[in-house]
Amino acid sequence: MICQEAVYHAKCLVALYNKAERSKQSTINGNEKRIQGIALAQLVAYIEETRSDTKGSAPTVFRLAELTDIYSYRLAQLGVEVSGRVHSTDLKESLLANVPGLQAHKKGRDIFLAFNHEVATALQQAYERDFDNEAMTLLKATRIIRRDMLDTKTNFSGTFNNSCQQESVPESQH
Image (tube, rainbow, N blue to C red; front, side, top):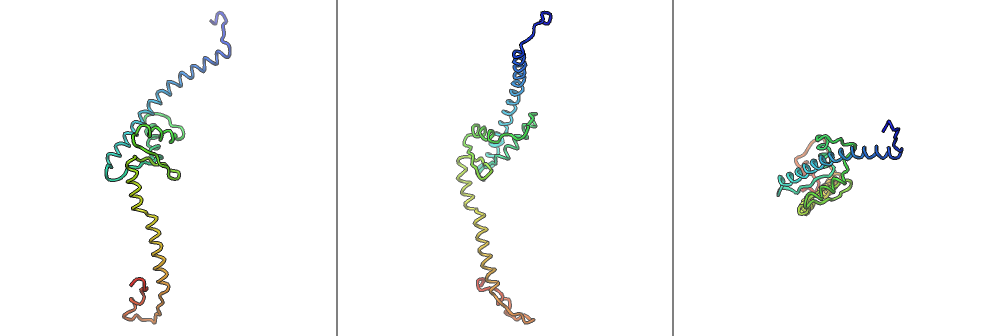
């Protein structure tokens, strides 16, 4: 071809180079997709093993951010270069599609993944153990005791009489 001084048209040459580059990238992407599939399968296995280990004792709830970190770490171990962060939304959709009965629940900035039948148990446990309610109850009790202590006045004469301890305790504490 060189002897005949044949040359590509500029558009044809660019198209040829682009086709070669796409072919090269599709081979790399195909290998990366395969590795991503392996990492996803291992993450699904982790979820199922965790669920079977805690069966009956407590509901299994996963934080999506933690699962994304585990997935990213596994991809790096398998040799896939993870630039930036793994798209957690894509991972969530893949997990929901591959793990039967898994549901996503959003709470603030966090997304939690739990199984359908375990959601009711988790809600019941949260209701039974409401730390905010306990804290508010303790706050009210503290205010009552503090008010009663400040209302109790004793005159110290330099010596303690026999009933000084009983006199220093507020009426509400008897």
